[in-house]
Amino acid sequence: MFIFIAITEYKFLDNNDLQHFLTIEQDIDFLLFRTSMSQKELQHFIQQLIYQGFPKSKMMIHSDVKLLNTLGLQNIHFRENDAQAFQLKSKYPDIHVSMSTHHLSSVIRAYEAGLDAVFFGHIFPTPSKSNLPPRSQVEIDSVLEVPIPVYAIGGITTDTIRKLSPNFAGICAISFFMKSSASVIHQFRKEWHHHA
Image (cartoon, rainbow, N blue to C red; front, side):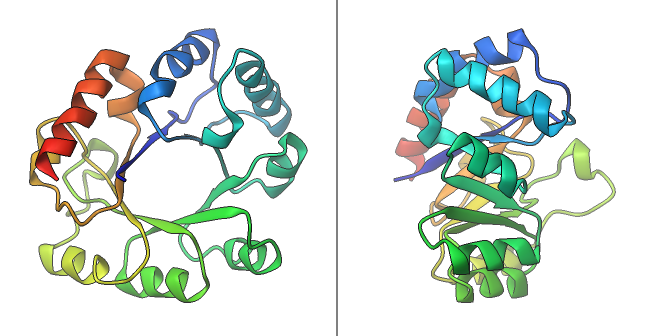
C-alpha cells in the first residue's frame, strides 16, 4: 500500500483549513500537524476536527508527546535524530513513530531503533529548500535498500511523481495537499497506482 501524508502549512489553522481537511480526508492516509499554533490552540483545533468526523487514526502530531497523550492519538513524527523519538518508541512500542531524515545514516539509525517509518528528502527541487540541492539518485537508492518504510518528501507534484521510484512506501507534501482539491488528490492517487 502506498501512503499519502498531508502536512499542514506552518501557520495558524482556521475554519477554511478544517473544512479542507475534512474534504480531502478520504484520499489521504495521515494528516501531520506542524503549525505555528500554541499547544492549547492546536488541541482545540484538533478536537473540532475530531468532532466533525475526521478519524483520529489518520492524525499525526509533530514532536509534542504531551499533546499526543492528551488527545489519545497514536501517530507522532519527529525531526531528524530527535532523541525523544527513540525514547518514546522504546517505552511505547505501539505508538507509530516516524522521523524526518536527510542522510542514509539517519535512516539506518531509525531502522535500528525500531521506528515505524522515515520521511526522506528533499527528493525534487522545492521552494522551501531553494538553496539546497535535492538528494542524489545514489543517496535515494541506498536509502531505499534499508528495510523501513521510506516516504518521499520535497517537490512532490503531479509532474514529479512520475519520476519517483515505486520503491518508496509513500509521499509527504505540504503544498500539493494543502492547495489541491479532493478530486485532484484522488486523481493523483490513481496516477500513482498506474505508475507503481
